Every structure is written in C-alpha cells, then in structure tokens.
Length: 145
Image (cartoon, rainbow, N blue to C red; front, side, top):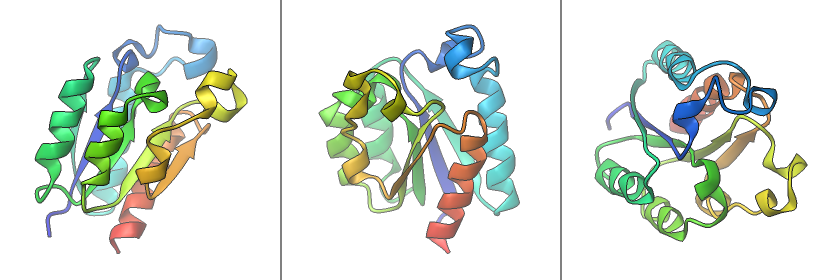
C-alpha cells in the first residue's frame, strides 16, 4: 500500500498568518504544511497538499485519493459545518481520515459546534494550533501501523 497522505485545506486557510491571528496564530499555511511534511517524513510517509476555497475541488481530490493515498488529513475550515458532499466523499474513502482544526470549534460560536466531517473521521485533532499538524501525522502513522 502507498504511504502517501493527502492533506486538504479548506476555505480561507490560504489567508493564515494574516486572518484573525488572535484565533489562528501568525503562522502561514505554508508553515503548517512544512510542519506536516516534516512529521510525515519522520514516519516514512509522503505528503501531498491541496488548498481550495471551492468545495468541488476538495471533493474531487478526495475521490482521486481512493486507491492512491493511504490516509487523508483534512482541515475543512467552514465546510466542517455544512459540506455534506465532503462528508459523503470521505465516507467512501477506504483509509483513515483525520479531521484537523487549529482552534477548538467546540469552544467558539455555537454554529461551529457541529461537524459533518467528524462522523466519517477516524478522529479529530482540535485546538492545538500549528502543533496539530504534527499530531495529525503522528495519528495517521499510528493508524496505518
């Protein structure tokens, strides 16, 4: 089986570093991807990353990952709360799925408390800021054995 992990980043994550730094920190998305890539490499995993503000792009990437990627780590951004097409695509993926959030949605506004991704994820890593990217790769490595 491939040792490729697909890291997906949802809407507005391309603005990390300047968007609400009091919530999301000052690190950029490139910084977080570099953290994930280093953690993946330490586990002998390869990493592919895609960021998109379009739900259809993320669904397409998930579908193309079937049979090609060993696992998916996804920070769906606002799509977390309503993107049933992402839920359905992830449900059809045969490997582990880790949901990732820089902040803890459960400690924020009530509308952020519902995740349509969580029911089809192996687990969720929330509220650890940029460290969550390394934790997600650790989780994937553990799930893949």
